[in-house]
Image (tube, rainbow, N blue to C red; front, side, top):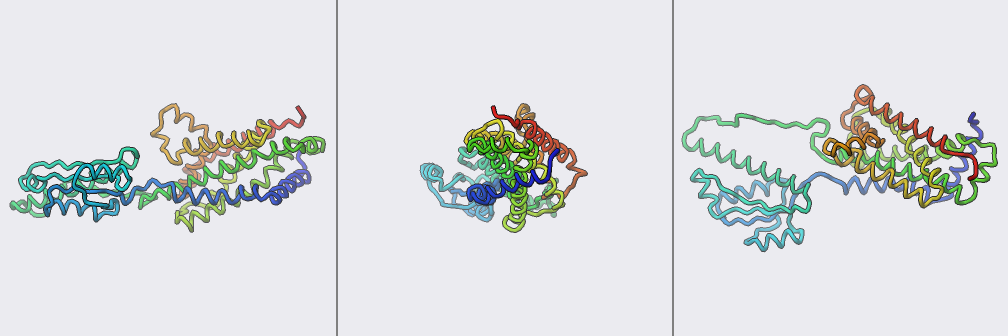
Length: 379
């Protein structure tokens, strides 16, 4: 049976170690803040101000109007007017431009005669995601321009008044009206950072005791395995919850990410997730026995799966079926879903109950494994 005084003695010892070791304290508090700032600003899926160059071989009023559709949009930034393919190649190779628009010499003549005219778009395919989005932007601009021309031509030849497109599509995005990627990235980023930092911090605790030879002294005391495990977890749990508070405040005031749901539910789920992640670090520390191996295992087991397979950056539905099955075993997957649901949709357990149950199961299993895995005997 765990006794409170022994538990507190281990916790106090770990607190003192953290305070006396600035590196541990810095890792526990400063690194999550730094990662949140770096990833929050650097990791973006928004594509704005695509740099383009234009080769206008027609140089007519119509071609200039067509070009103005791009220069007047926030999604494009005209860098230069060029006069040959060599200039286009040089601009894209140097990174000055990401795309090039080429307007043929007969652009206005073919339009005025009611014939189809082909314009060429060259994009830098080395960044396939941005290239795909850019092509979509250009298609939209070209379609709107063509629709306006058709309406003008019909009206000019005496067509009926009040011409309109048969389908009036009015898109509206719920939960993220401006489609800003930071609104979905920052909540998921909190989950990934907490998973990595929590497991990395506690993965060094037991291994450090073995390396310094202090584990023998702890084993010789009446302290039980569960008292030792929970005593070592508690200081990092307190620091971790403080990190969650900082992350939430940074998301609210630095990145202006709206928190539409219950803050109490968010911190409750964060506490469960943090307990599981810290316990996972303890399990890694018990198995590794050395700090170097423990830190390497912690990064491989937590960072890569959490970053790549949790749905934080890449949509799980777009992954191969075998990889989708693997995501069910990544606890960050459920926490990312919970955070996005609470942050952006403002929903509660009536919608997120399955993720909450699975996350709780993860925490319970990790705590049990940490206690069972610790063998209070020298090998």
